[in-house]
Length: 139
Image (cartoon, rainbow, N blue to C red):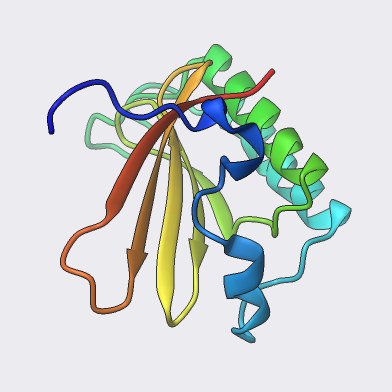
């Protein structure tokens, strides 16, 4: 069915559709949730303000400050909800920002598309394609 993607904020507590905490508790290489680790990721996000256009030498767009602020807001929301910290937070090539969680069993990413919108992608090992959901960044 083609149409507007489901908004996960019709059920805010089910926002992380994929059970990150349960999945990470079964795999030893994922870092446990802690305030310090989310703070480290927020520091990484703040450093993205230093990126300039063509930061990779191949035409990559620098994230707009409003997108960086949206990513920080989402990181603080994740921290508040006790979500295990992402493995990393990085700039995308089109001015977006990614949070990535990766284990030997699955890969999960959230791409911050705008100050108020993000898209998640879940790819378990052996899957042909990811499950994709678009959602609003909570206030």
